[in-house]
Length: 321
Image (cartoon, rainbow, N blue to C red):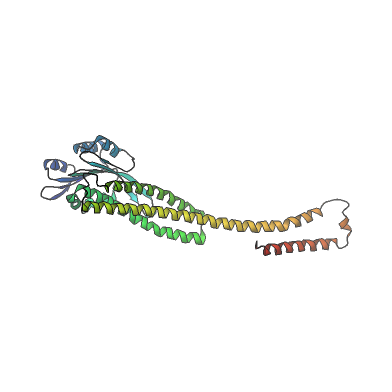
């Protein structure tokens, strides 16, 4: 599917499909945004070649997976961004490569699945940002995408608070599995946001021709950089919190296990000498001198009772019970 927004020399905004590319070619003062989603690979390649995109950039754009990056060519800048196909407050994240080709008069975007940020701007305000410059439109798409990330990550904070309460009241292995899943997802998100932060770090140098080093552009780039930096710091903080909750649960269960083992140890310490005495006098030897004592049975029972009570007193004094 090819979707386009065209702004002619008079500032009129038109929306349509691939047919507007010919109108853009015929009007030297016009600007165009071409978005390609789930289009035929050959059609995508032809469109990118029509706009003079570099073959290496085209190759990277059409790959299934590639880390986010930024490259400058003679007549355009290529940005590979990690976009969103699906994302929710449980950090269930489906990412996709979102390619930007930013020129003086054009912005080309390419993604294999629906992209929420692009759909929003195609439906509203996309033409306004294109009128300012294709570079500002590209940054606005990334800013909108970062906002979707941020909304869901902040919503995740509520679930993290619930987990903390549940663990303190009645933690279980199910909670541990959930926390470990969150840690894994947060690591992937943190890596993605670090890539994006590196892109805005490069743009802030002001060395890229189609991102001019003026006050308006610096403000937009700094705003986007701050948002990526916040996303990176939030994912790091929540990752640390998940780790703290896991460590806390392990500490509590270890303490409970230690308490249980201490009680079992005390019981064993009391019954071992009693079992020894019972076993000693239960042996079938013909001659055992103590058997001749008239009160030997009661003496042995009394000694065994004294031994048990004495050990209980000793363990209580040592605060083992």
